[in-house]
Image (cartoon, rainbow, N blue to C red):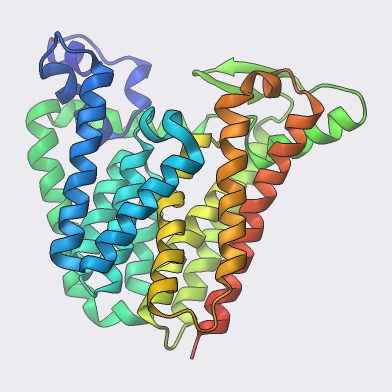
Length: 361
């Protein structure tokens, strides 16, 4: 798409599939060594990205943070498997999110803001985390540092993307992404579809599903369900904003849980859900367990958090990719597993939120 636009061809609907930074990275990798298979270049790029993240963590966040990040990525690979780990670019978002909350914990507020801007340019959801940087009590006096970080992130994106895309196509790409994701429908893995499919199968019926934009959607759930889902999702995010703002005092290590709470709520309630989205939160969930185990376990239900995290990691690859054909066929056993997986998201959200309330001084 980018190659054609640079040659003067009008943009197509494909420009709405990926936000600007993702489009730019893919275009750059295609241009480097064109004779080399894209998958090989992608694996090399991911390995370099992981190495760079570990070096940053070791240099600026400490040996413990670097160790926990490395072990968390290994744990994510073992739980979710190679297809979800390497096959999508969601791993980049998981790495950047982990860098963001670790930088926040170390009071490197400018770096935390920069990381979230970069993550939001790969997928739009991380932009929902930026208000937490200003609302949480530990960062209210750090407004200038946060704004500097946002400014640095926007500058880096501009330097990288404007020469590559041009302002016109960059603007078109942003508009197309917003328009595309606003009308995606209800994907079959979402909580809204999973529960409806379970009720249908329990009664001996099948939901109507169809392939749309390279993803399977529940066609029985129309615009009304999609609208309700968006209201519930955004309503929960604004409720979390209010909860963060009302905190008078909160340990910095506890504040970053709001990042995970926002992501878990989006995954549990959004009309669109893909198994690869678990890559956003799995490294940070495992990292949070590791950090708290090594530094301060008092008052933490680490066993409960760990059990739910591992359950989430085991069930997700069973739904996709291992038995996705059974899900498309709506076999009852896999529909039940899908609902248990989605219920785990709600339970993990509730446990983490109760942890924040209990840890508040």
